[in-house]
Image (cartoon, rainbow, N blue to C red; front, side, top):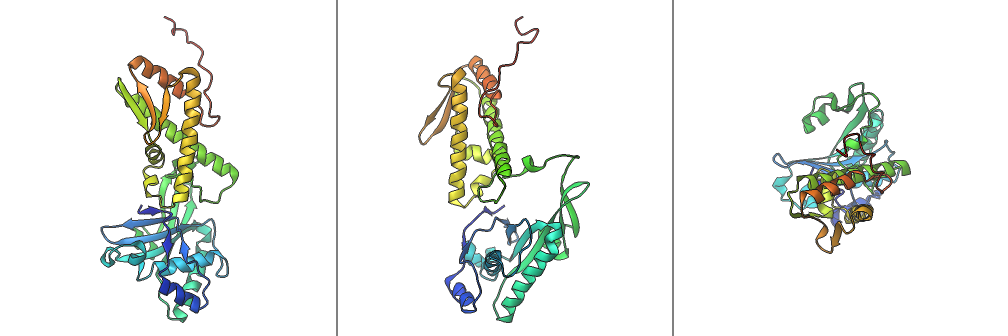
Length: 310
């Protein structure tokens, strides 16, 4: 993973040529992700789409820009030395049944470039497919060779029957993604649950007396397997930090009801939790474990067991 949602801009001279040829094109665009194998200089500017699109659609304006961006001047667009980019492609990830139509659209866009003598990058297409074995990528020979896969279906996530794979996503919630309200609510909850787990793990690992500090950046990286640091869309990153702040404020308020002042926010530092001894640490952990990332409240205290008072 090289970057998430980076802002890429067409060089002014290329943009002028494109417009002179009356191509409808975006001057600036944010692909979903850039994948890179930096040792070999391979870069894949990657877009994930729920379906294919036509050459006359507004989405084709982004596709034209991305095709040019992956051309001979890709290194310039990425701010790298020429030798750092040995091969660059535009790759689309779409549901497998949509792959032929997606490939046909890109082929038409490339034909139009070639007819006017304009350079563009290579394009590859990966099909996302669900089989009896799990989730897989359906790829042709060229795509397989570039990504080091086998031609055909490559299963990357094995699933049991009726298993929902969404909690396993590296980035469970992306404010830039066009989703239903139900999907957004679900994604945010998974994000909160991961931050909650990271907090509980940090408290459990602590050795009192100590102060445990929780920072937005650290929590978001824990929740996204380090992907947050690669996020280049500042507006989205701010949105994620606001979500983290809201989550931590909700957690602090819920814990405060039973353990007043347990978590305190310090500007520029983060949220701090003082653990003077193991007894306090145990009480905080018990309280934290009762917090629900769905209701943002503490659940009921469990009833004492038969031997709890012995």
